[in-house]
Length: 131
Image 1: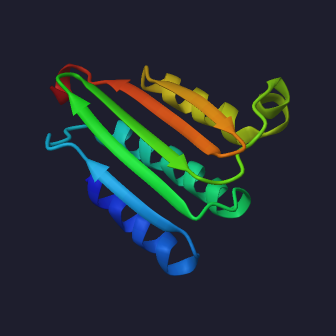
Image 2: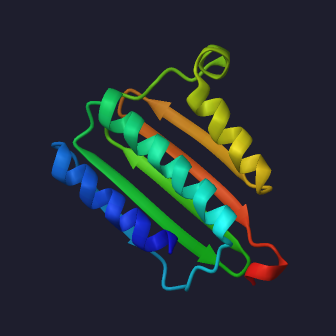
């Protein structure tokens, strides 16, 4: 499932870079649909790839939580951050694609970045078949 795929991604990053990746999952059994899991995984991949390439981070923290019908994920790093402005959405496909892909599954993405790191959060409400 998604949890195992994220753990494998974290291991792969640690094996191929100098970055420590920490994962944390709530005790819930995540029951996301295959489509939602794939979209969320691809977004996590994009976020972590960008952190490895551009952030100069020493650490990435990936957290996945579920409370009742809501799932949220955060990916944080302690890198140099990025400038979050309209140009980031117009010129770069990454942030815009994350937002568009989360909208496909009626989810949301938020971005927070400064010179001490970045935090990208994904919010998703489980649909009827996932509850």
